[in-house]
Amino acid sequence: MAGPMMDAAFLTYEGIASDPVESNLNLEQPVWILGKYFKPDEEMDKLNADILSRFWFTYRKNYPAIGGTGPMSDSGWGCMLRCGQMMLGQALLCRHLGRDWDWRRGKKETKYMMILRSFLDKKDSLYSIHQIAQMGVGEGKEIGQWFGPNTVAQVIKKLVLFDDWSDLAVHVAMDNTVVIEDLKKLCKSNVNTWGCYGDCSSSHSDKRSGRHSHSSHSSHHADHDGKLHRKRRSSETSESSEEWRPLLLFIPLRLGLSEVNSDYYPSLKVMFTLKQSLGVIGGKPNHAHYFIGFNGDRLLYLDPHTTQPAIEPERYSSIPDESYHCVYPCFMNFAALDPSIALGFYCHTEADFDDWTQAVQELVIDREKRPMFEICKKRPRHWPPFEFPKRPCHDLESSKSDFTELTYDYGDEEKIFDSSGEYEIL
Image (cartoon, rainbow, N blue to C red; front, side, top):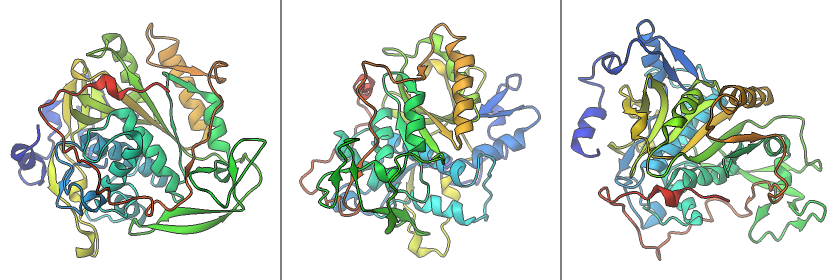
């Protein structure tokens, strides 16, 4: 539910109980939050602090028009985009600060502020609503149109290619299958061999691999303001690297036709217990949520359906970040979950990835009669060859027009979301 009632409940901390989660918890059941275990009857302070430390991205209003002529608010249509931001934000916190990092008001660590600035609602923030919405045009989504879990994962995969500071490898596993060979190839490869698409006059075709190579490679990184800048990187001839590029793994799934098959509930719970967990993006029809854990038979989630004023960072010496953290998570029964979801995982090292594959194999695939997805060591023979991700050769900023010819779809809270159209098999 969006609107004034939600605004009143979420926009300020005043009037909210010091332990708002406690009254909703089943104290006899453990709580799992993104791979961490809590005893609700003994560790309520730690549990509240951990939830408060997650990024909470919500609808915003009165920000610069998307594309120069588009919407100035994402109310009613941007909930899945905000959930994608929350999952990505959690990955970046793990990447730069570690899973155990916690947020406190007044604690303005440089890396934390750099991450936050990259999500501010303005054109030159790499992960802003502006960049995500406009990159979605390439996925067939007009500005202002509702995204599905797979769409937002595909958009994030493209945007992360411009983030040299984080240097993440992003993979979206399709066909309910994770291929170990592909992910190790991706994370150990030299990004300069991935190539680009579009008009690359300075590139030439590598006949051996079919990819483009460059004598030099220009790329973006974010500075302290979250703005895009260019930096030069000398090329390396080797396609592989001994170093492991941290992995952000999305697994889009459809766990039923109109509702989640209850056979999947145990597997879903296991996903939240893995230390690599980034949670789940999904929700109810036309209402996306970011699920961060569970307590008994109920999911805990952060809800983006609150409209807050956009932050104008130039007005402040330091970003007022209280509105980006939420003390009041929501609860939902597993049975109410829409079957179209995307799982998220972060593997900082190769050992983390190996641990994840072993845990999923032992706890889900070998144990459950209906596992949510499969893990293969080698790429199936009938699949096309694995391809490295490619990005446009031109600047990210210069690739974005004002989209003055587009028709904007501002969303409709009353319409029924056809989740089946959001699950794509490649």
